[in-house]
Length: 221
Image (cartoon, rainbow, N blue to C red; front, side, top):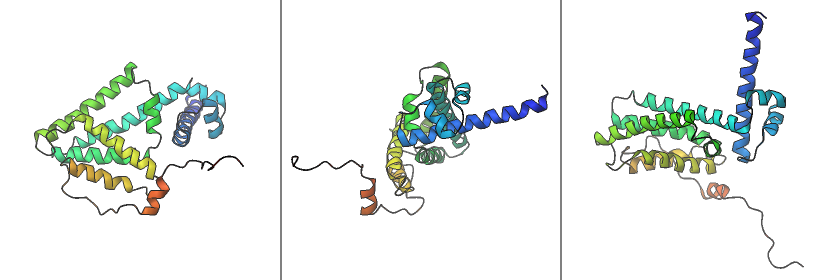
């Protein structure tokens, strides 16, 4: 087989891999963790055998999605480190990471299902932690935020913003930014909001309430 005939196969394999991951992302966001590889194959419109060649089990697919996520957050952290001002560096990371989290409705499922104790993933997790801790320590040392601000606050911040973003995604997709800026102001990382945002209306709030089937009142007739 010539090198020229191999190239399309490699390109097809990569396209299939991306399609599988994108389909899994969408299904995790819609249905949570209750998804099988067979269902992903059917939704993606590709053969089950093709899915299993790329990902032998659901765990390997989740771990690949986890690695992709953490690679993105690591890139955001290393980009933030280029900022000369420590406060701006931490603020930049928090807002950029919050923006990514707001778009990523499958993240909680992927974090909950990843093999976080395996060596490759643990090393990636620890690497991101070192970068985030470095941003926090530099900002605290420079007096750019509350002196008790800690790396754990970064993860709590993203968790809170993610909860708001997931609940308001279909009603007010930019609502998360108002609350992210409010938290940053509380941490001393912002003096005033960067852009004017408004609170959701009563109607929007009602649309974010959990939807549950109504129970019949009274006994059976």
